[in-house]
Amino acid sequence: MKRIILCAGLLLCICISSFLALNMLKKNTVYFTNDLEDISRLYQLERYDEAYRKADVLYTDWNKFCRTASVIVDLDRLEEINSSFAKLLPLIKIQAEETESEIKSLSKRIERLYGAEIPLWYNVF
Amino acid sequence: MSIVFIRAAILYAAVIAAVRLMGKRQIGELQPSELAITILISNIATLPVEDPSIPLITGLVPIFTLAALDVLVGFWSLHSWRVRRILCGKPVIVISGGVIDQKKLKELRYTIDDLMEAIRSYGIFDISEVQFAVVETTGALSVYEKTKFQAAEKGDVGANANPEDPPVIIVQDGILIPEALNRSAISEKRFAEILSNKHLKTTDIFLMSVKSDGTFKIVKKERQL
Image (cartoon, rainbow over all chains, first blue to last red; front, side, top):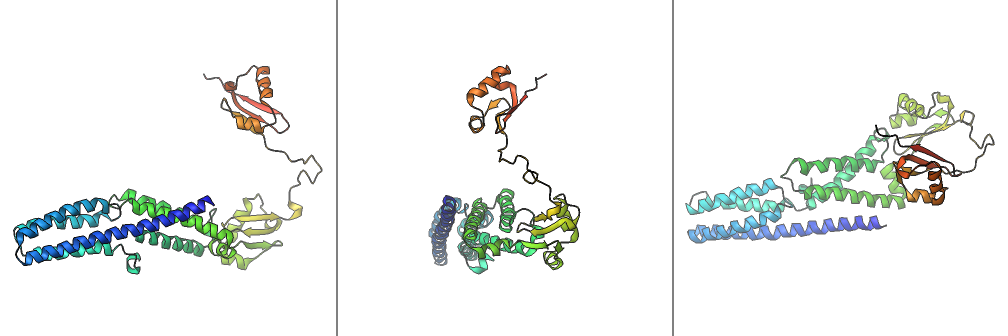
């Protein structure tokens, strides 16, 4: 009976930690996508310095989040976003044309990070 | 992580279904659910080891999910005849009253060679000596010989048929096993007496076993050259 209780507890723990991990991903991805939207808005308003500072802070936050996320998310997906983030700062600095498209693509990638973890049928299969 | 959890649960059900579909021939000694677990866990465990980009947790979660599911399903099947039937199937009688049920053999995809091989493993080389044979849920064959071919046992010939425990090994490689000595038919005092009579120390003994009637056998350690 002890083993049954242990196994039921184990399954419960896995379910709860899955839910918590998903929640953590959601919270962080919402934070990053919202901030990226802000950066995009600032960039459109030609407030480049502000956009750069915000992107810099966001990049630092992303690096912190990356460490935690690497426990549950495939490292390859995080690396893709990492390299995109690293590209964003110089693009804002030189006010490049592709900055906005890069921000959009980065935002989509981050959204997908959470989206791919939601237990919906198309993700499961 | 939740994806991995659901995937593991789906894979568990899928592998059991596949193993049940394959039938008893494929199983051998394990029950279908045990085989499913063995196949899945051995494969899953290698994934995070092979690919460092895969988080370890995606290997651990399915392994523990599968193990826990197996225990819980096992518990469920212990209480439900129906679940047991679904998971493990049921034994199939292939020889009854000395007659081979060819239809059942076909259903099981058991060839006559398979049947003969399994029967020979019981030391029976003539199928006419078999009264009854069952293919168990593990795929193993259980055979019951016709009475006239069964070996006579002690009870049949009126020999001493008192129940007797097997000999207890009390000294192994020069080390006394106290629990075994307590279980054996000789006391600590008697053990010491035996050693002093034979001018031996415990460390000189390679193996000492004691039968339930108190008789013992000592194998001395060979002297190292």
